[in-house]
Amino acid sequence: MKFDLNNKVALVTGGGRGIGKAIALALARNGANLVICGRTEQTLTETAEEIRDLGQEAYPIVADIRDYNNIKKLLSQAVEAATQLDILVNNAVHSVGAPFDEQTDEDWQQHIDVKLMSYIRCSREVIPHMTAVGGGRIINIAGMTARIVATLRPTNGVVNAGVTNFTKSLANHLAPSNITVNCIHPGMTITDRMRALFERRALDAGVTYEEIEAETISEIPIGRLILPDDIANSVLFFCSPMANSVTGQSIAVDGGSGTAINY
Image 1 (cartoon, rainbow, N blue to C red):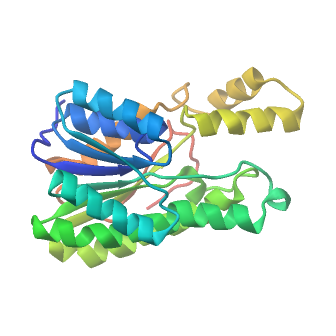
Image 2 (cartoon, one colour):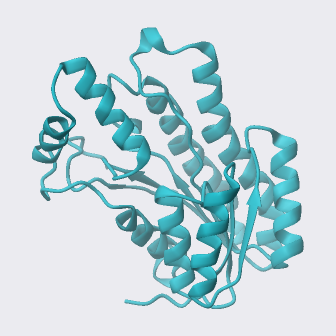
């Protein structure tokens, strides 16, 4: 199925690699032009070239969104380059996979700033631009630790729970402006962060990386790890006309591994 996003402009934070890159490319394949931001110029440039190869415009912007002034500058540059913003995908993340007693104040603060606060700030700055074009879509990429406790991811749990609550609150606030806000919880998705987490789990357990991977897959009903494209497909749904009446929702893309029942 192909979604018609022609003449739409999407901003994807953390858009140069991993899940963010998959989302950016999926949006481009469906007609959107892209503004992608991140801290690594090389990966942003490479992803922008792939977007252009699909026939869409791409504007890579290097930005450290831990700082609010950088976010304001990012939005200003994005609108100047692309003239409008219809879609915001908050995807940036930086966390340390370690147990609670190894997590420093700096680790906690960095995760809060890179993810929760940047999502709040990017949303705040993009709203006037979406209002100007008659509406928009905001999609927040959180994580399954919003619903579960994970030994090596204490900061993830706190931050992702915050993102989820923020999603619902903002959705209610923006509904009269024709701006929908939804959240996606990726399961164990094949990214550099996941590989680093598996390496730490293997080290702590005194087993191989392959054993940790096999153990994880055994706990996923669909029998495989989640792909970045799986997350991107859910983003496409939330951006499409099929989701015109869907807002304030959080959906898990986890292959069925989550055991909680969420009403």
